[in-house]
Image (cartoon, rainbow, N blue to C red; front, side, top):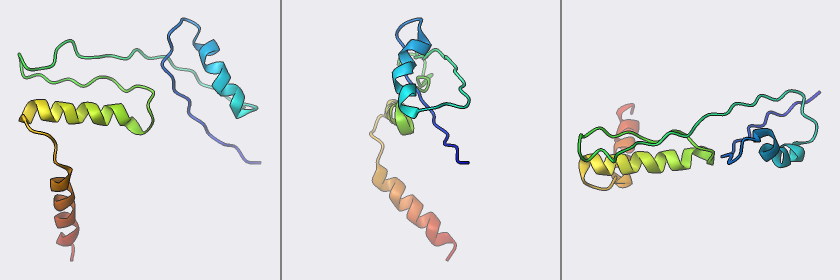
Length: 101
């Protein structure tokens, strides 16, 4: 017998977490076992410019950590004063790959 694993994440805005998730869970069909966990989303209280302490926000319900990556790029720019250059990263990765040749 086959089983599928599914992860559902959402930002809930009421005290009825189960009720908010129910429409998405119904789409899955029969559920053998379900685990529900509720966590607060935390955010820094300052942007770090005054004390040089840069803190990211906690993970949210976006897929593939989209907002987390955006948050880290913003922190990098605050710390260095320049935008993150993905071309430099591509070059470094290529150099790293060539080390083994």
